[in-house]
Length: 196
Ligand SMILES: Cc1cc2nc3c(=O)[nH]c(=O)nc-3n(C[C@H](O)[C@H](O)[C@H](O)COP(=O)(O)OP(=O)(O)OC[C@H]3O[C@@H](n4cnc5c(N)ncnc54)[C@H](O)[C@@H]3O)c2cc1C
Image (tube, rainbow, N blue to C red; front, side):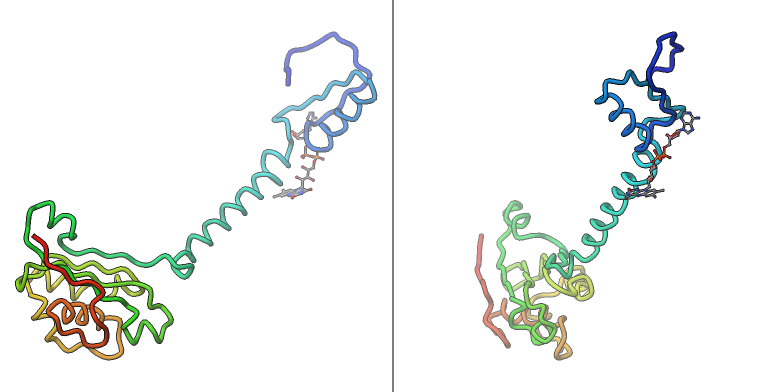
């Protein structure tokens, strides 16, 4: 848009550069009419600057936001981590043993149809727990027990001896501990190993 005054002569002057105005100007151009499109604000009018395009962009963003909110039910698990990871413990040169328990053996997870996930324990061999890591449903709700266990330097033996309500997701922590000390109750440990 050129705001400078002009002495040029036109066949047609169109007031308003919205969809009505610019479409008319384009049509006039194809008819070989020398056309001036005059706009006081911004070309595109209500449609381009406030109405159709911005509102559709906002609706699109709202759709994406809604999908993001549903991400958990679309399969994204909760992930929580307390203390040292296996990698960090190894990096520090600690002697550790690691136990994993699959939620596939947890009754409540099976009832809820959410049995994808695991509890992983990192421990000194026969000694205190160094880390607890949980991937799966309700991970953020059952992690508190792990926080107490790691911060009070409990062992997997201590944790495994505690009675966990049944059926609950929290049982998975007790199961992981029992698996680590070689006494799995509802499922064998998926992995048990000792590493220097
Ligand atoms: C929220 C919202 C969503 C919408 N979504 C859709 C949609 O999905 N699909 C659809 O088809 N329509 C939609 N619309 C309607 C669409 O925006 C309008 O139908 C369309 O903008 C009308 O075009 P127009 O050129 O007639 O007027 P406008 O777009 O209003 O353009 C008029 C232009 O003229 C200028 N002007 C006014 N007076 C003068 C003057 N004296 N001299 C020079 N310039 C002047 C103004 O500054 C303005 O730029 C929507 C509208 C809104 C509010």
